[in-house]
Length: 145
Image 1: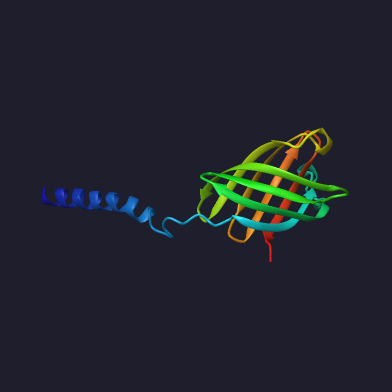
Image 2 (image 1 turned 90 degrees about the horizontal axis):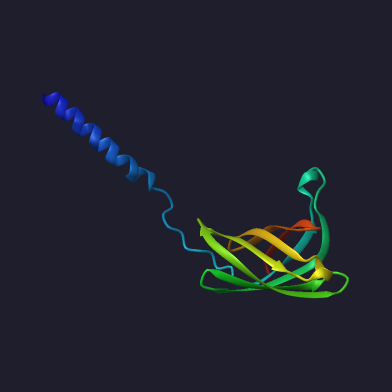
């Protein structure tokens, strides 16, 4: 009987230790600071033709990002045959050491209508994928120097 109680106690101790071990690691991470000015490019990309690399649309893209709670506001601007400037609201959620974004905006008929996008930002990199009824593509930004 004593062996049975000892075996039961050891089993309980092992089961109790598993959740404690699963929580180990880097611990809670602070969200990255993604506010500020970013620069980069946006490119057309068709995922159905993955062997064709993205084609850069406009070499100059800048974004200024501010945060209000879990919502970020980005002002994207540049020149792609003509100057453009869009203010976009992005919902974000921290996942580890990055912020994952999603959003939707109507840029008007002249600029392709409604766009949806997803993105990921760290302290040093802001990348994403966008799609609309007529266009798909990617954007890639780094901190402005």
